[in-house]
Image 1 (cartoon, rainbow, N blue to C red):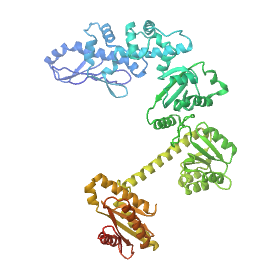
Image 2 (cartoon, rainbow, N blue to C red):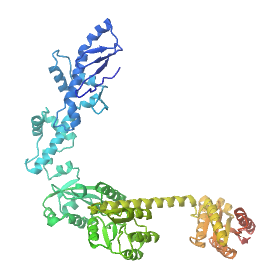
Image 3 (cartoon, helix red, strand yellow):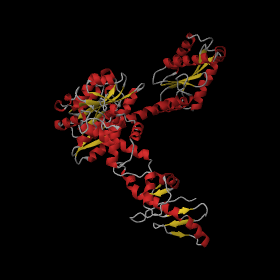
Image 4 (tube, one colour):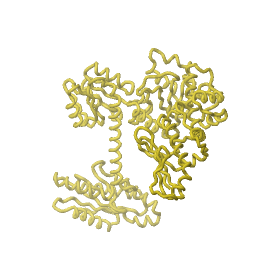
Length: 628
């Protein structure tokens, strides 16, 4: 059975109803006058068609009523300006406009629209039932909008108390023509989670709920602390009926942290907004909306997420932030270093950044480099705002020295109008971004700085993860030594270096004696502990970041000694051998074979020489070292 469809031709609605009757298997097309055009003519077919003409006429009238009365409602989205027709109201409309008095009711309409689609003006095909909101849904939308009106009228003093269900019913009927009983108002109100008259008028609790806040209380330290849970969390304070200037027009003050110091933090948060002492008048006198999110575990990670989301929404981090994207401890803010010799520009940039960051001002590149030189890594600024036109040393030179000295800090170059080429050169040298001194460029500074900090943070995290991955690939999980793959790579690198520099290179191969007997006697757990202990002994016996200790096989180990001759390698092997004996791990000992690299022979010969020496040493059962 084909689906009925509605389309629009030209500017006026025109309905082409395709109707397939299950008894015929043919399709007929009816225009706006209910005249039909058959695909195949025939006397018998015409007689049968007359029997369903009335139903076709009803279908057409139904579709016409739907589109004409409800298309505006569909596009407006305002349930109070236009009243959509329910199924029952549509049935009455069709009966009133049809002289034949057709048999039509809400149930019949539901059956007629089931499975049918309508092509809306945008060209999309939507289910026909989309144009038939249930009566309860219409009532809920109207009551929700009326409750918003009620709150505004209460705030403006037009209403002395909230409306009861009877008054809501009367207002809906009077203003919007909706027929609804008092009982239906109560049902819809409960479905919407709207409290009754008593609770809506009690201490602003309902107002807080309507604004999706957690509570409403007086804006003083005692009241806020009483309403806040004594746990770490994210808090938002909003003054009732007061608009506070903030990026994006937000009217809330954010507090991120724990409630232990909420009194001190509340004063800090209100301080930037306290113009001529105006906010003090509201303390303890007017209501405040209070929102909080309690964070049980890992709340530092959650506060960082909120910090990032806030910066994305408003283009700048919150002024009263209690967290930093750099993961510093609670109570600290990001430090920004501004290098600017012009006092006026420096002051303006400082004022633009001061609400969001801790600002440090320096006048020259030499001062900045000395400032960074005596600073610990964890105290480095989060970003550097570097002016190009500096005395003695220009911005590009300062940038080059900052990067060469290894200061891992994002630098933002500030240039004058017409100096965009310098900014491009700075980006090539490693600057994260640039700002041109044109117009009111200071408005964009917080967003630019924060973006650079975030990009640098992501790049640092990516590099750290890459190093961690590399470390996992080349490290033996059990002993912490390098694995066999790294052994061959490192030995090849050191052999190339020794040949190029005409230097020394020695290799020690170790093999544990009687380890299989120890493992069979005491079990695999004790065997693993013995291997871990041998790995620790090797690491403690070689030069850090010079020599390389590796696990060569199951109970075989290797040490690569760059720049070491046979005498030095023999001393290292003897030291490791004594330390293993002193641990007294049963009969376990360790044999060692040493070889010195000969550039004339290949890598395979080098390893084979050490392996042959190890074979000779194994005959001594760990009592000596064999050197070749």
